[in-house]
Image (cartoon, rainbow, N blue to C red; front, top):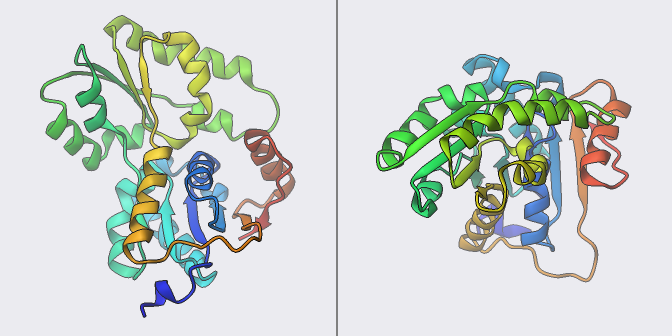
Length: 269
């Protein structure tokens, strides 16, 4: 029996540079309600997009090793930036399923009727080789409008109500999408999932919004099923632990609680 099969009740580890990956955690919880989860918000180093490749790789390795030490049976890199920079390195070093995330360029192009597709993402994601490869492979038959969104992640990471600032940023970043008359929009950052309804209000119901957390959750399901490692219903409620590298736990707990609409207490990771 492989090590991953030895205890199906071992948790799934999920990490991001901050709180955006909570959208992925939420999707995994919905897809796999019997699984225990550990979420690591590497907020002391957020956003990863402002760091060099070597820094992103180093932090991704350190966080992954923390989750491995906590006996996780799979690791989800719930961050487009970390996936682009570090997922290949992690897979070469860790003998566990490593599931990454990437903007859904291929499904967006396939589903777009007008072949006019928009992508919202961080500057790092849009400049990464992985993203450029996706556009070259799947964007040849479509007109793709890309928009970097500086400030969205940083504002979402703040405690308190910043709806006015977020509204101003969204109005600015969605204007090129309206001008291009897109019919499909890709949310290329896990943080943006928390803004999907605000985006839908601005673009209207004729624009399909493709978000990736659900697809990642289904991939986690598939990968664990492949190695017979899915948790079995035990009658007890599976656990969720929230860890962070942030120094101010009260600040981080307030942000996470706001987004998860529940009282969440973070631990130092």
